Length: 131
Image 1 (spheres, rainbow, N blue to C red):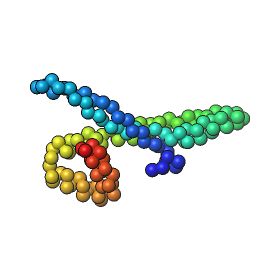
Image 2 (image 1 turned 120 degrees about the vertical axis):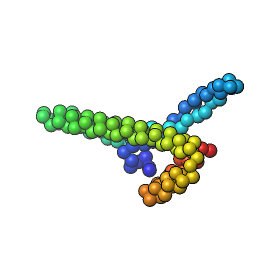
Image 3 (image 1 turned 45 degrees about the horizontal axis):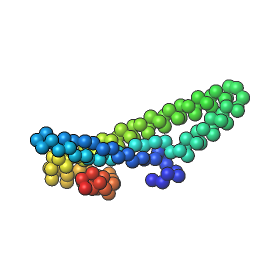
Image 4 (image 1 turned 180 degrees about the vertical axis):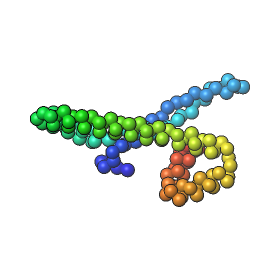
Protein backbone atom coordinates (compact mmCIF):
# COMPACT_ATOMS: atom_id res chain seq x y z
CA UNK A 1 0.00 0.00 0.00
CA UNK A 2 1.51 3.29 -1.02
CA UNK A 3 0.79 6.43 0.92
CA UNK A 4 0.25 8.41 -2.28
CA UNK A 5 -2.89 6.61 -3.40
CA UNK A 6 -4.36 5.04 -0.25
CA UNK A 7 -7.28 6.54 1.63
CA UNK A 8 -5.87 5.31 4.93
CA UNK A 9 -2.30 5.02 6.17
CA UNK A 10 -1.21 2.68 8.95
CA UNK A 11 0.79 4.07 11.83
CA UNK A 12 2.70 1.70 14.08
CA UNK A 13 2.71 2.35 17.82
CA UNK A 14 4.81 0.49 20.37
CA UNK A 15 3.72 0.54 24.01
CA UNK A 16 5.54 -0.93 27.02
CA UNK A 17 3.55 -3.33 29.19
CA UNK A 18 4.91 -4.17 32.64
CA UNK A 19 4.33 -7.65 34.04
CA UNK A 20 5.22 -8.80 37.55
CA UNK A 21 5.97 -12.44 38.28
CA UNK A 22 3.86 -13.30 41.33
CA UNK A 23 6.42 -15.81 42.66
CA UNK A 24 9.74 -14.03 42.14
CA UNK A 25 8.32 -10.48 42.06
CA UNK A 26 10.54 -9.85 39.04
CA UNK A 27 9.18 -7.09 36.82
CA UNK A 28 9.59 -7.52 33.07
CA UNK A 29 8.72 -5.19 30.25
CA UNK A 30 7.06 -6.48 27.11
CA UNK A 31 6.51 -4.21 24.15
CA UNK A 32 3.18 -4.41 22.36
CA UNK A 33 3.00 -3.23 18.76
CA UNK A 34 -0.31 -1.96 17.42
CA UNK A 35 -1.30 -0.47 14.10
CA UNK A 36 -3.60 2.52 14.02
CA UNK A 37 -5.13 3.75 10.79
CA UNK A 38 -5.60 7.39 9.95
CA UNK A 39 -6.98 9.21 6.96
CA UNK A 40 -4.16 9.92 4.52
CA UNK A 41 -2.94 13.53 4.96
CA UNK A 42 -3.30 14.04 1.19
CA UNK A 43 -7.01 13.20 1.48
CA UNK A 44 -7.34 15.53 4.46
CA UNK A 45 -5.71 18.35 2.48
CA UNK A 46 -8.00 17.66 -0.48
CA UNK A 47 -11.08 17.87 1.75
CA UNK A 48 -9.74 21.10 3.27
CA UNK A 49 -9.28 22.65 -0.17
CA UNK A 50 -12.76 21.46 -1.15
CA UNK A 51 -14.17 23.10 1.96
CA UNK A 52 -12.47 26.40 1.10
CA UNK A 53 -13.91 26.25 -2.41
CA UNK A 54 -17.37 25.29 -1.12
CA UNK A 55 -17.42 28.33 1.20
CA UNK A 56 -16.85 30.60 -1.83
CA UNK A 57 -19.86 29.22 -3.69
CA UNK A 58 -23.11 31.20 -3.73
CA UNK A 59 -25.93 30.20 -1.39
CA UNK A 60 -27.40 27.56 -1.09
CA UNK A 61 -24.53 25.64 -2.73
CA UNK A 62 -21.98 26.80 -0.17
CA UNK A 63 -23.70 25.16 2.79
CA UNK A 64 -24.64 22.06 0.73
CA UNK A 65 -20.98 21.63 -0.25
CA UNK A 66 -19.79 22.22 3.31
CA UNK A 67 -22.27 19.69 4.71
CA UNK A 68 -21.27 17.10 2.10
CA UNK A 69 -17.57 17.53 2.88
CA UNK A 70 -18.26 17.38 6.62
CA UNK A 71 -20.19 14.14 6.16
CA UNK A 72 -17.35 12.72 4.06
CA UNK A 73 -14.84 13.60 6.77
CA UNK A 74 -16.99 11.96 9.46
CA UNK A 75 -17.39 8.79 7.39
CA UNK A 76 -13.66 8.54 6.68
CA UNK A 77 -12.93 9.01 10.40
CA UNK A 78 -15.40 6.26 11.32
CA UNK A 79 -13.84 3.89 8.78
CA UNK A 80 -10.34 4.63 10.12
CA UNK A 81 -11.53 3.92 13.67
CA UNK A 82 -13.09 0.61 12.57
CA UNK A 83 -9.90 -0.43 10.73
CA UNK A 84 -7.85 0.37 13.84
CA UNK A 85 -10.17 -1.70 16.02
CA UNK A 86 -9.96 -4.64 13.61
CA UNK A 87 -6.16 -4.37 13.47
CA UNK A 88 -6.03 -4.48 17.29
CA UNK A 89 -7.85 -7.83 17.32
CA UNK A 90 -5.22 -9.63 15.21
CA UNK A 91 -2.44 -9.77 17.84
CA UNK A 92 -4.87 -11.12 20.45
CA UNK A 93 -6.06 -13.84 18.08
CA UNK A 94 -2.53 -14.84 17.13
CA UNK A 95 -1.45 -14.96 20.79
CA UNK A 96 -4.45 -17.14 21.65
CA UNK A 97 -3.76 -19.58 18.82
CA UNK A 98 -0.09 -19.80 19.78
CA UNK A 99 -0.98 -20.36 23.46
CA UNK A 100 -3.42 -23.14 22.53
CA UNK A 101 -0.61 -24.88 20.62
CA UNK A 102 -3.10 -26.93 18.59
CA UNK A 103 -1.47 -28.15 15.33
CA UNK A 104 -4.85 -28.97 13.73
CA UNK A 105 -6.13 -25.46 14.41
CA UNK A 106 -2.97 -23.89 13.01
CA UNK A 107 -3.22 -26.07 9.88
CA UNK A 108 -6.86 -25.05 9.38
CA UNK A 109 -6.05 -21.35 9.83
CA UNK A 110 -3.19 -21.64 7.33
CA UNK A 111 -5.48 -23.31 4.77
CA UNK A 112 -8.14 -20.62 5.17
CA UNK A 113 -5.54 -17.87 4.94
CA UNK A 114 -4.20 -19.41 1.72
CA UNK A 115 -7.73 -19.59 0.30
CA UNK A 116 -8.24 -15.91 1.15
CA UNK A 117 -4.85 -14.95 -0.30
CA UNK A 118 -3.52 -13.52 2.96
CA UNK A 119 -1.16 -16.32 4.07
CA UNK A 120 2.00 -14.25 3.50
CA UNK A 121 0.67 -11.34 5.58
CA UNK A 122 -0.52 -13.70 8.33
CA UNK A 123 2.85 -15.43 8.43
CA UNK A 124 4.64 -12.07 8.78
CA UNK A 125 2.30 -11.04 11.63
CA UNK A 126 2.89 -14.36 13.44
CA UNK A 127 6.67 -14.03 13.04
CA UNK A 128 6.57 -10.43 14.27
CA UNK A 129 4.49 -11.29 17.33
CA UNK A 130 6.12 -14.57 18.32
CA UNK A 131 9.72 -13.71 17.53
